Image (tube, rainbow over all chains, first blue to last red; front, side):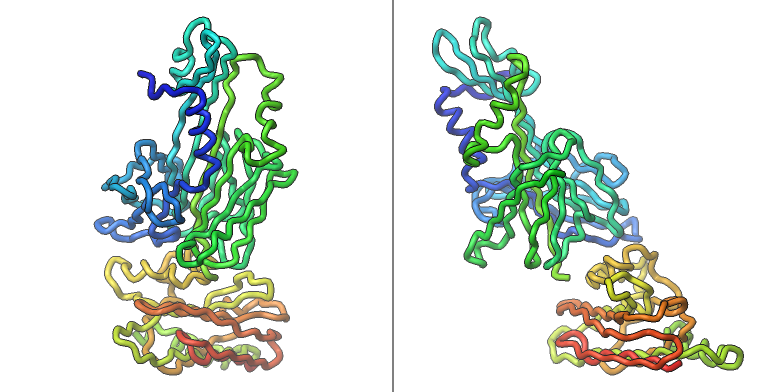
Length: 288
Length: 175
């Protein structure tokens, strides 16, 4: 694997911090339906179509298409499903998903990467690469080496017939739904548990924004902190598609907790990679 | 179609039981499918069921949908009766005998159920809700609630008026 990018320390730092800080570019997958009826006719199976984009406004493709290279679709029985008719345009990507089993499908885009920062001949440097090759990007003799692995998931869900249990992934950060994830109803709270590497995580911010800002006129974003059990109870005042977002460790803009990341890793041996985790999901809330 | 209708089988049930089990009462529902002056009218899918006061589903009463389409293609839109789909429909293998029926034209439809119908049999005395939900192709969707008191030995009644996709919906019980 060759080096993906090489940037000066300042520019790299700016980019890495900007991506999560500026909510200008949200990544999302939006399915044409979150609840479907399983077809009884093998010649006309049930399909949903899914849009994916990185946009300024939820959920309008106004910026960049989602790169579909790392789609992971998991059927209710745990098997992996290949998508059909994947297409990436200028502003959005789209694909079809054949729904052939009863239960809940997890539709995810999973991106992993890595970067390293170090001092070489007294100069601060950063390189990017993959989890596998990042260590080899660091030149011999580099000092103050810090390696970070990044793992981001962008998800949505589709249920045919009755929902099935979604098993936690156990890796990265995720929102474990505490009710069937496709059963959200306006006026009823949505309950979730924040898991980091499979364990409930307290004090993690979960940002929630309802789609349709363009016509609503206000962003209306809300941030919930997970409680001692890692749980959040989210207000879902009206029907529509909602975007959920969480990351770990907490981002620098969260003020006092900006150094949390550093503190967490103080006891670890030098050279132990840190993990920078992010999660987004688009969930549908029905009117009743 | 008549042989399969809920009204017909329930009425037969009442008269047959009337001779042997005098204690059985009769639930009468009236469901008005409103006449709508729209360009592209399709008869709505309509479902009716009983819930307890906490919203727990107790039993289905009727489901009107495109039951006769080949390959069960009419099932595709059952999910649009969202409340019913979530509470019951998605756990059923439609069609279900005595429950599934064809869609109905605008007008007032009367349905009778023996109190030995499984939605009522064994229902403890207390507060319940009749829910009726309609969903129409190229149209809207609506769900209404008719609260009623249930005691197999006492008469009761309740009614509500829908706003667009449903008209009058009435419940009455005579022991």
